[in-house]
Image (tube, rainbow, N blue to C red):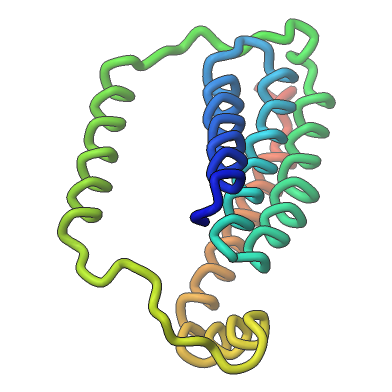
Length: 169
């Protein structure tokens, strides 16, 4: 990424990602927040492309833009309280600021204490998709299955909450 054009484009996508993420957090309209989340997801996918992680960029677009965001938009549009179009008034400035400072501190600590964080010069044999599939089904099969069980539990919990009859109160 030594080319100045790439650097300018990288900073442009980084600015789009950060600004749209800030708009997601600070806007009061839920619909505008959901649509700015679209730009955040696309910006993150573009940053993955600049990191030469094409598979993760495509996965970002397919899973998050194609699945999660569409589901979120349908959920927002089908709720009855969307007619007001406003987010709730609950703000937790002090805990949020403490969490932000703690996360930034943890990331800086990890950044400065991790050795060998630069990408290696060794090249992978075969395609990256083949390598990801092999690693997922061999070395990382236990975490993969644990995430599957966690997602299944979340799906069962969501189905239970959606089935809950609110008129019986």
